[in-house]
Length: 212
Picture 1 (cartoon, rainbow, N blue to C red):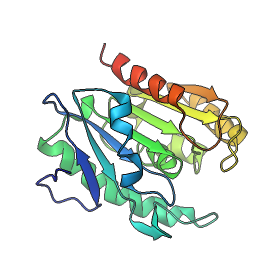
Picture 2: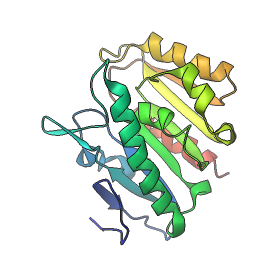
Picture 3: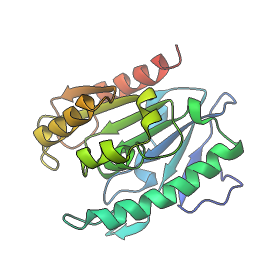
């Protein structure tokens, strides 16, 4: 895989676009996974002018990595990972990619970071995609968020049969943010803690629609 000539804090896989572009999708994996686990994701989306950077979380977790510790010790890891992501996204958007054409995608733990980091980050991306995750503290997020982020588009999906992160918890947390002014499209699937093919097609369509 191609490497970027940039000083990034996190290990990563970079997958360049087929058509030259400054669009970028940042992908954050779930607990125990790694960037390798999402190498098949970009081909499924089939967006020729999208670059992808797949980050590895900073903490080792069995054979993979983790963005933060297990409950109730999540906060230090969330804050540390957010610091690293701030540095790396600032670096990526300094010259290589356009923030206003870029997306932040996260699954499970990565979904939480999409909310907890993405909504606080000082720059506004084109879109935020949070799959099968939860929010650490939705009311606090509304207090701390970058108010300009409400100009961005948010897509969140969850499975009613999720045996890892309960559907109702995530749905209730998203409703707190929606009531606080977030423009979040919440999509429900009959699935477990995974990403299904129908969902991949929906994500690809949603991303393409933000540019139309």
